[in-house]
Amino acid sequence: MQRKNRHRPPQSAQAILQQISQVVHNPDRDRFELWVAGDLVGVLGYDTEFRDGAPTITILHTVIYDEYTGHGLGTRLMVGAIAYVRNQGARLRPVCSFTKSYLDAHPGIVPLAPA
Image (cartoon, rainbow, N blue to C red; front, top):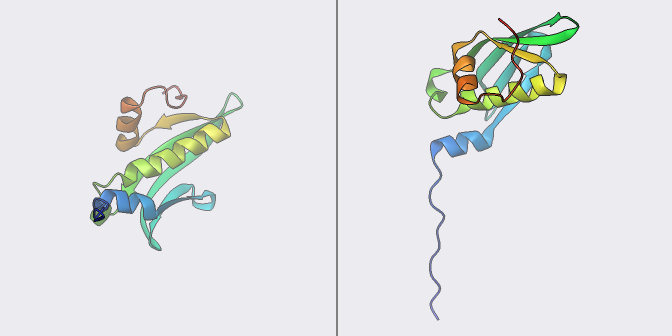
């Protein structure tokens, strides 16, 4: 009996980058960092303030270095930030255009702060 040769389909660059990337919260610098194979390739900066006793986290900017754009890594940073916002019981204020676009595409994913 002859065995069929079963190969996995090749993975896309996006899938590989997602697997080897790591989001790290750096509270000393008020940002989330995206690391790929030991290199810092992106950051998401934020600011925290308290209004009416509740935390509000403002996302100021999201930056992915040029050679890593277009692979979903900005979304990976955003997912890490949203998990943090939820864990803190905070509201989110998006200033960053990427964050605004992401939240428009995923309404209700996290409580928003009034403008």
